[in-house]
Amino acid sequence: MATSRRVLHVSGEHVYPLAPLPIGDAIRLFSERATARHISATTDVDRSEVIATICRRLDCLPLAVELAAARSATLGPELLLERLSDRVAALGVGPRDAPARQQTLLDTLRWSTDLLSEAERRTLARLSVFSGGSSVEAAEAVCATDIELLAALIDSSLVHRTAAGGSIRLSMLETIREHAAQLLGTAGDRLEAEARHATYYVAFVEALDLKSPATQADALARVDADIDNLRVVIDRAELCGDDDTALRVASALYRYFYMRGLFREGRDRIGGPLHRGAGDARARALGARALSGMHFMLGDLESAGAVAREGIEIGPAANADEAVMACHTVVSHVARERGLFSEAKTHLERSEALARALGLDEDVIIANTNLGELALAVGDHDEARRRWEFSMSKYDENDVSCTFALLGLASVAHRQGLLDEAAGHFTKVRALSESAGWLHNATMAIVGLAGVATDRGAHSEAAVLLGRARALLETTGGELVAADDEIYQRAWSAALTDLGEARFAELLATGTTDGSHCDAPA
Image (cartoon, rainbow, N blue to C red):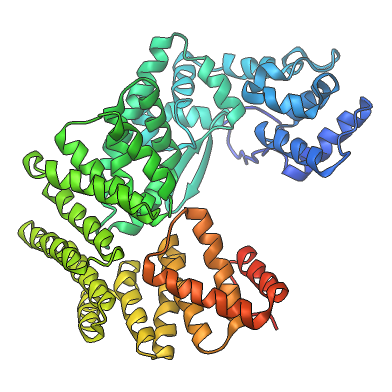
């Protein structure tokens, strides 16, 4: 048996990668080394959390943890944590009797990277511009490298290879990434690498189809994998005053922000560059489409309506009819929430007409679904059911895209007192939405189930469901539309009255802390 920083590539070789310590072992190592220096490492829960955070920030690398424990003799864990933005410099020198390359973390990292070829060091340095790892294709494009150099870095244990969802991801420990960034050399080298990174991810996100049911799941998974890279593109663009790029990427992510319930982030990332005047007329119309939707989901009707009307005004001349279509839908939602049903219908019909003119079959179905919502709001249950049944006929009933129409059918069944039908639809929406990570749709279904439970007199069940709904709303920052909020408030009041304050609070907390279980405890 032999230990080596690099795969040997000899006949019969079996490679056993040595991973960083598990977090529990890292904390124990820190505590042992700190105790040896007469430092109390576990005096209270707060300090224990600080030590756990230190270990995680150091990737649970044994040498780094030992050096951190020693440094805490001077700084204390709390101040040490504050200084870990520069992990390498913060840790200082280890035992004098250790090999030279192990006396400081910097010595260890330099020793490892000095053994690389120039091309390997250059590739490692360029990889540091990624955040949260990358695909092999992204690494090749951004680093202007090839698979052989990437394989050499994997063999050297500087880059990690993981398989996820049928694709390969490359990543570095943050400690190594920080050191690799120092290898870029001049500011020009870094700017060049960051520019290549931005170019790649702008093209990446704009090529994804997050709308079509046929491609949506795959597109969501790809954004999930690279969301840290997309965020850092926006952040870097804003730092260097490139609001046009920031707006392009943020606007392209608006469906992702909706599906994942990231309404506040969507508002801030889209709204920042848009309010600073970024983009040409078309980009601004697309931004208005995205931002108005975020405002509406956060319950800011005034801002939603104003931004959507701006999109309607500038979109036609900017060849942005699809954005105009979506903005009409937002204006309609705002009007409906304010009880202006005639205005709401006018804008929905304009949205539907544009969808037909543009040949956007999916948006024609969406417009029909929204017209069903408006019919329910004015009390026309038969028209609402007819429209939602038509929408459902166009979807795979096991695809999450059907959940908007299925929520409608659940709502009209609930209004008509068909509680079993309503519960069945709400339960299916919840299952599909939670499986796909559509947090707001899941929230609406849970509120609906709480309403059904209330009508059945099952107030304990309703209280647990309300706790889960409240937790999701706090997570997303979303607001319920008026009809759903009425159900939520009614269920809340009924459960509180029936159960009493103490029992209601207990069950509410159960729902808040356990999202997988919404049945009332025995």
